[in-house]
Length: 91
Image (cartoon, rainbow, N blue to C red; front, side, top):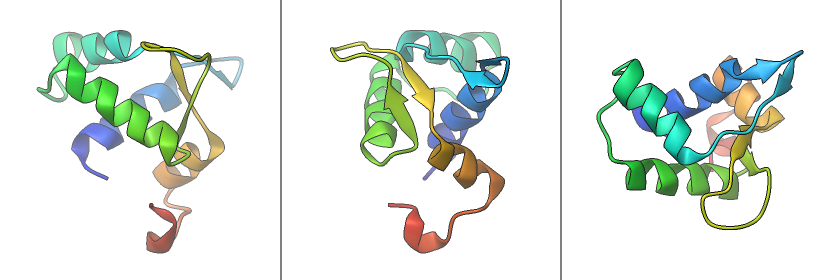
């Protein structure tokens, strides 16, 4: 995990309605973290790759199939942010 992974997870962790995670496309996450909040300075393609990898590893899940699909945080993603996962669980 690196600062971009953490920023994505933290942003999506805060994006919920009635404690239910909302799904956002990589472009929306990129816009907010790069343009609005200036938290990181990476390209949209980097965000797309990072979010796909986070989904492959169970930290995010796709809300629907297809390119540009929105993602939402999973319980594993929230456990990572809370520090509840061992180092061995971070793959």
